[in-house]
Length: 512
Image (cartoon, rainbow, N blue to C red):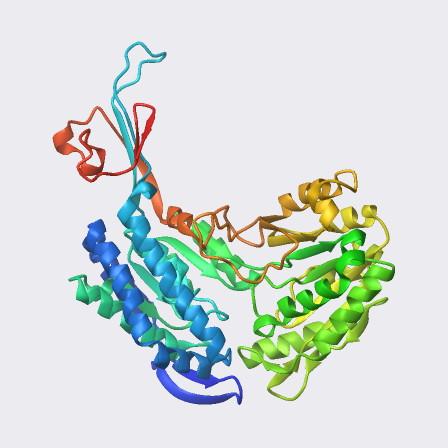
């Protein structure tokens, strides 16, 4: 029986561009996974691995014009945005190459025997080893940075794990071209091309997470899709780690003093953040707690002017467009909800940005307005007007986990010289809600840096790990300790002489 074709589609018109291939069958997925599993040993050499990652970045850089053009044709995200995203992706690959070279991620710890300890300590030597084949589920809104060559793939390869990527249907042609670049980079260093596999299709994604040789999975997408895969990963005869990024409201709190001090700046900044990329960022601020009163009124006026001036945009696909139009219409019909700038459809292909307002008291208890506490993907945000700190606390206490949480404070509040510690109290309320807490900024824009945390309490993510930054590599490793093992049998990472020059903890002392 023939499998369904995979088409590249232009979201600006809804028309098919080209057939990329066909959806993978269960047999196709099995071949991709078993091929990746068979070559996992090829990634054992850290020097080769690091060189492979750098070559992947170089080859992506060299093909950037063609890749950006292809991605723009499939996503309508624009060449400027996509050029920046590809540069970020290449930077991320090179950053992981540096991490592999350094070797600190191996967490080498050596403890020599100590018979005087209670209880006695034997010879113990610990480090981390790669899990095996990793399934990567590409995101719709980042065809480079969170897709085939993105953070999950880069960190898994850096850990020494081959990957099989389930391409996103919004950019299948881009996925094929990028996968070819990664395979060319692998071949440049004598690595088998099967260290990077690619499959298409919904059923292929389900088969992938269930395959017995897949040892872990990384996902970026919807709560519904991610939760289904998460449950499938847990229901396997041998459950596997599933690192999923599912959904986030990304709340923002604006204090009265901050609104009084710089309402116009905050309103303009909010408009820029919630409409960036046509509102298709996972860290888009989707709920803003703003004060009732003159400062809050000025903020809304500034927000209205800035959003009004934002042009119509194209969402990644027509399904997302239809969900956005229906979602904002349903929210706008709730009691006590106003739309100073009405979001919704412009024509059959484009949408316009907007925002809704509601009294914060409507969100303080369970009821019909709970829909406003759910993410709506696209260029819309909800501004909840509060009258006192109790309403802020009541609303925040009802929020699920988020990737980010933001507070805008006045200069004095931020310096701790007024407000009787109000900034400290608000940070204490926001910290349990998110993996990244911002002060006087906007959450869109996730820096690729060693200290980054892109993850948060469920449903933002299904684990406590980050998918951005150097520590993302930890998701694909597990610790192993060797006890009383002759040095001739130990891997070189655990030899006393440290022939690889690795950072380590040696008899309690940290060595660099």
